[in-house]
Length: 460
Ligand code: ATP
Ligand code: MG
Image 1 (cartoon, rainbow, N blue to C red):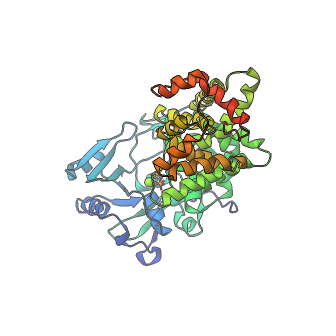
Image 2 (image 1 turned 45 degrees about the vertical axis):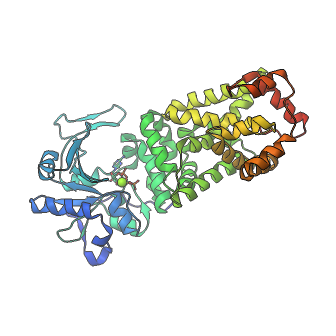
Image 3 (image 1 turned 135 degrees about the horizontal axis):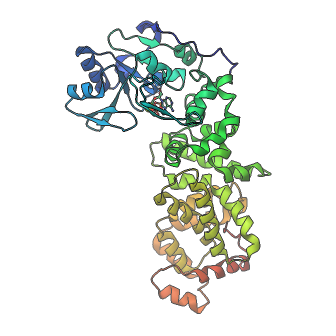
């Protein structure tokens, strides 16, 4: 954290940072974004590159996308570009399409209530609708952080700065524009953006910007769950997941996002649950950096694992059969979490499968080994088992077995498995001849047999 600075000075004449002083070169900018800027300029409009792209270029990063702000209205933008569609109800935006690339063009927007009735404010200070056009200065001050409010134009290749953002970027400091308390109340998601952007950019959060967060964190409960889901993916699947997690914990935001996981981590004596979760995020970051795919269900399986374990602990005295208990714990965690974050079913179902498959790794019977390996979620569940060795080192044995099972040639595996005990119960025989449908009661016996064999129990 950096020492608190004075509230953002808002200048009506911007500081103009000349081309030589900022180091942004046109070569780093998407040619399509440049086309949009030039065309709007030739038509007599003001147009600038703005937001994350300018910020990322200033710190030497590669922007994800290029957004343009202009004084042309969406209709005027549409009239200039054939490949343009207007979108958005809350605020009309123009999307200009160039093959797979979309350049988003937004008309300068004012955030102040000008009495036109176009702006609605919730009684607690949240902005519900802000469809008011404004000047470039208005557009700058309604943005969240000073670093996100810099405008790059192709008329003079200068950066325009109304809020002191250029100096903040140079000092690698994240600072809210205006009064932090008010700005978080208007839109609590800005607290998550503070955590995420500081993690992504390696910026320190200005003390005055950080100070209200622990107190205001509970306001996130009012944010739309679908928006929080999107924000979760940006926090954890953009290559800075571990740093984001640490920032969320430091700022006291974790209980507002993942209440049951935060509660479990608070009583995590040796810190093994936290270590496992941090390792999962580290692995995800490495995959993102290597250009490999990452999936929200594995991420949420890891994020909610401490909650799932805690729920299992709560159910322990109910003497349910292990599988019923695991299913109930998984359902409860999913249901409680859904009240905050809208995790779509296409992710919550495989997330639960990962958890429930953990109990099946202690089985070493022939058909079952082969069947488990054929399960569509086997690989994810196996990766998860490997992760769990951080929490339970004794799982290293089962991990070694399943690692070997996968690398062995099929015939050799079949041969090895032939030496394993055959299923003893009649139900098992039926199962071996069967069609692979789930049969709950059998699994209950497996848990008993795992400990009978003196093997570590991989069930959660
Ligand atoms: P990223 O690198 O993740 O894309 P970004 O800053 O570009 O970061 P976007 O969500 O793409 O984030 O938003 C684009 C711009 O819109 C921001 O730079 C900021 O100026 C403005 N903005 C986004 N969210 C808010 C918000 N909640 N309140 C005010 N301004 C916002
Ligand atoms: Mg962006």
